[in-house]
Image 1 (cartoon, one colour):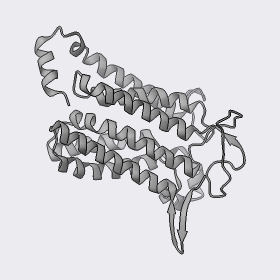
Image 2: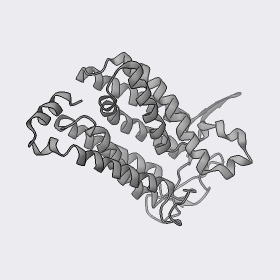
Image 3: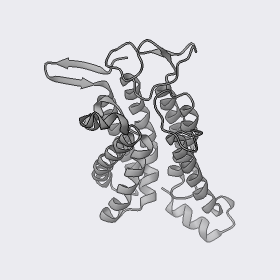
Image 4: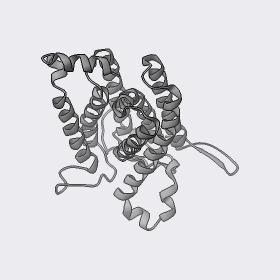
Length: 269
């Protein structure tokens, strides 16, 4: 692949950085568009909050990666700051962004779950683009394989092993997000309660991510005596939370509670 898009003297443009930034911008633009169409949160609030959400997501996703790969960074501490070379943990970013969102909701006076619903489709779409950056950088690489669609990295700057056919797990994850994006876009006009779109994204992505993890070949961390990777463990928690919130709002589906039905219909976002 091509970790470095081009070099001009001391200036180097990394493909990962470009695509990660493009993913963030696409996610923001999609969220702002949805906010304008639905009229529930001011577009300027979306732009202002998104800036801080991106900062929080970057810091927390990088911190999570450094924690998992701490052995490497003990001997290379300055490498912690080289995020353009790859190394961001999605679940770490989500945790940081959610924490920041709760704080921003208090500052800008908006409903957390309404914003979360608006952000979910753009988040899925932007993450799919960001995964393409992983592919070009060679991070998040797969196990050796002989499947017809295997990819072989030959660039010396690649993070992936050189000259070995590997599962293109970065593309698997990008496809996972595109499928989830399509699902929640179809669900949007049929949603029953505030937060449903967000938790659908969280749950569906987690299931797909747990499957993709079985094909990963890079160091994954391990819990439960190596049974689950760190990300698979996070996926189990994410699915459990998604199911909990669906169960909590089950009356929105039954229609038994007329007051609740009216309340959910009115407050859907």
